[in-house]
Length: 192
Image 1: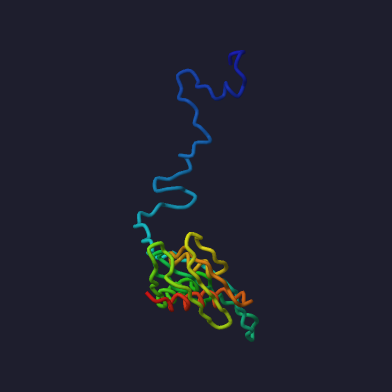
Image 2: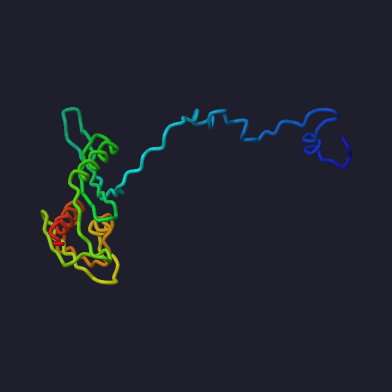
């Protein structure tokens, strides 16, 4: 060992006529040929096809049933589906786990999808008001204001691709599913 080298540098330096020492923090040593060794081999499969609709979960609840052996839990999920181009739907799905409930809600929303007529500036032609269960929603066109809405009304109108709107929820109900369905009922009553 030369006197100017520290012991750590001397250990890393190649010896006379020998190969350089192996690097210990090289990531290629932990990866296999087919992908990352920690996650298993990489499978060459086709990428999942993207849906033409965007989906937004507006409400998720855990529901309990009391049985003889104890409580059984299910999940109830409300979903808004839309293509931002005039088509929108609201669906409800219930299942033993959230993935199953979301699939059911998506299918339900596709089944109950409506198409609305919009003006050139992506607004609506006239004001509408509708009631569903305990929720009462009013939607009015307002040029140049953007999307002025709250709660589930905003989610439904954004999924439908509607702008330049002012909306008002006339009830004290906070139930997002009935608010969303009241919004869809109001949009159904639009005349072209």
